[in-house]
Amino acid sequence: MTLPLYELTIHDAKDLLDNQMVSSEDLTRAALDRIKQVEPSIKSFVTVTGDLALEEAKSFDQNPGVLPSSNLRGIPFQLKDNICTQDILTTCSSNMLSEFIPPYDATVVEKLKHSGGIIVGKGNMDEFAMGSSTENSAFHPTHNPWDLERVPGGSSGGPAAAVASGECFYSLGSDTGGSIRQPASLCGVVGLKPTYGLVSRYGLVAFASSLDQIGPITKDVRDCSIVLDAIVGHDPMDSTSIATVSNCYSKSLKGDVNGLKIGVPKEYFEAGVDKSVLDCIKESLLAFEKLGATVSEISLPLTKYALAVYYILAPSEASANLSRYDGVKYGYSYKDAGSIWDAMEKTRQNGFGPEVSRRIMLGTYALSAGYYDAYYVKAQKVRTMIRDEFSSVFNDYDVLITPTSPSTAFLIGEKTEDPLQMYLNDICTIPANIAGIPAISIPAGFSNGLPIGMQIMGNYFSENTILNAAYAFEQATEWHKMRPSL
Ligand code: GLN
Image 1 (cartoon, protein in one colour):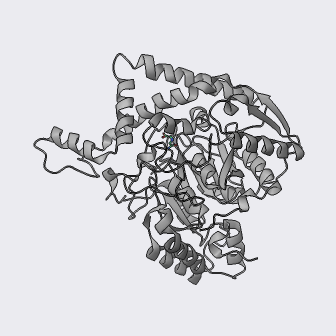
Image 2 (cartoon, rainbow, N blue to C red):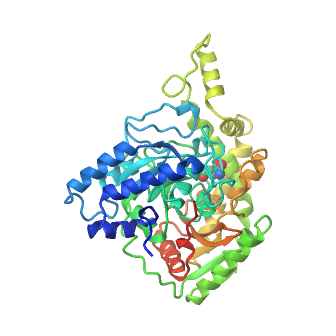
Image 3 (cartoon, rainbow, N blue to C red):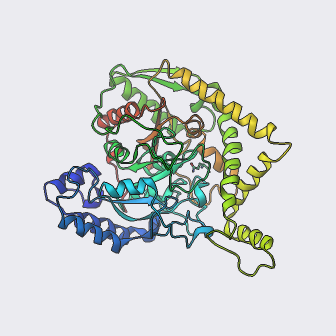
């Protein structure tokens, strides 16, 4: 059976391009037609750049000699709308930036452009990346392609839904506490949060700078490694970015896990995780054993503090980062104010939605004189302990496997009234951000027609190891080939 073009992976599309069986224009039209067809029900985009994309695609087709070795050349992609794109609206799904057109490209965008990628648009998200369902977008919620009544996860819900429904071949998201992996899990696609510092964040609108990381959302693991190859690397514009030795993740995929030591931290399988998710991950662990890996239960007792640490650190950093939106420098500005102070107050009151205001208030409180030591400093200390705990288990284990999300996709509106319930969605993903280690979510099964994701975490800069483990599982299963019927 031949798949429609929009369902192809990056590597399949590249093969067809190389053999001149399709043109970049064909691929781009396939994505744009698919957007036209499903976008009214999915709503994963904030901006579609159709004309620009077609123009680019045609110019690649006319110059076939340009970048012949790139794996991404001529292939359409989307970007989460908190990644700056020169001359293209970048809103963070916020009224504060609803008219913001950056004068520059984020480093990852420059890199993808240099690889010959074709931008088809910008993906919807929770406002300023704060949320787990994309319902905090100031514009519209995004719908899960597997069940339109349900959320796609968040905050990169637009990117995950767009990849799952074939509106683009891949997308980039950002992950501060799980925002790449959790939506990937809920939409049945692959999402990787790289090691902190591996991918430049220059041009990513800051949420919580000690946690934010950009990473790929793709249809399979090979695609994930191809996109990672293109975006890694030291960037003098980001002081936290690190020079790496490897950008050959895709070449080193072997799919061999014989002798791999897998640790299964029991704390991730306790209260609050749905039975269908637990059963699915347990079955996946059996599949790993069959492939020759050893699986051992371990304990990471500090896991229970990760969520609390995150909800001190992330709002604290957000309150500092978001102080720049004052109506003076750029973005939305309240016009009829009596004084500059009044203008700032009204700008922030009207420009930010309720979740963003909540985070700013939490962060400002945690950082205020008298509370700073009790909350922020304490959280930093616990963070160091969590990091040390991970480092010590990686002396004995190559990877750790857990569920990505405690449940499958929930109904739109189900958790909006209860922020704490919403925060619990990230209980399995947040620890990797706290420690700065890499983690991937891959499709591992279904329950009642909804995808379940499995998380594989590894030591710092062990992307090769986790991608390889993920690839081995993928080769042995069919979950990544499932597509929603739309
Ligand atoms: N859902 C988490 C939050 O609301 C994580 C968000 C993210 O990773 N950007 O903060």
